Image (tube, rainbow, N blue to C red):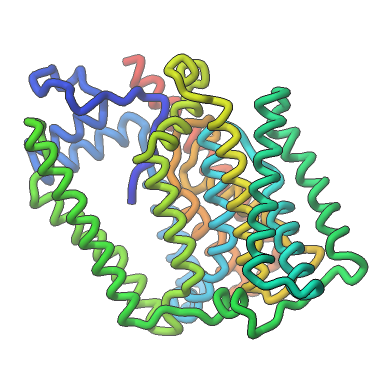
Length: 431
């Protein structure tokens, strides 16, 4: 998995001469030289150096997830069973998709408190237009997604045009769109989606065959390896240091294990859900957009320092517009997937703890509340943590009040770690 991007550090082009004093190079290039010259030992040294400097990346959430799974497995041996883990992936998907949008907003140092209401409203539009009005399913789905896009553009326009804080804008949206959802649903307040509809089948019955699932693992590992080898060849042809092929092989092997083991476990029951695969694909695509595209680098730069980004020629207004639009769109998609999984739309769709879970997932996953640092994989890891807690406590037949308190404690720990690591990075930078 990729490490979070830190927008507060200026990126240096790979054309930096190799003869420069290593201490004068930025952290990413220092790591590259260590790995190139010392291989595995250099990679370990670079990793420990980053940890000491306060760049914890995804380490805390991975350790936390392992501890949570171990505790629940000890308390109930069914927790890590294939059947329960398949259920966990289904439960994680809708919250995780919404959390991707929260990650993008947090990268700017902003917040969206209305994602739950937007997801519920989109689900309501799907239910009313598809079930009551008889629209084609594709049109109803597109209507829900476009609605999310329009809401996000509206938020972005208010923020950039009038300077209204995102907290206030989206808090108003939380209340306003909840009211609109109730109005759309009408007096009945609840609609059941047809069991034979494509959205319900996709969300509840569509699973990859074992052969296809393992084939995807092979393809992903092969693409990763080829990408790394290509990058290595390009660096060598430019006269720059590059990681040895042994390191690339080790990383590819580790990726293969990380992908193969979960797939094997899930195949012990129904297999890998198509809906969960869509979520993972959205995470990978968003991560690529953040790290590899000009738009993504601009988002991180704006979150790190707005004024510096503006002086660098970045269209700050368009960045805010696009990110708010993306966040609400992801919220709408998450709401549609949740409706398909629950086979119903009602007044509580998108309500209850949807906002809490989505925002907590992004923060617990490692996205900084201070902007400029985070990863799309934060949504995946954080959503797994949040829903693992919910799933595990349900297996233990504990009241929802316990779940709220446990989630609150985990969220508080995550924010504290983020604050301490940020302070450590600042002290390291001054040193």
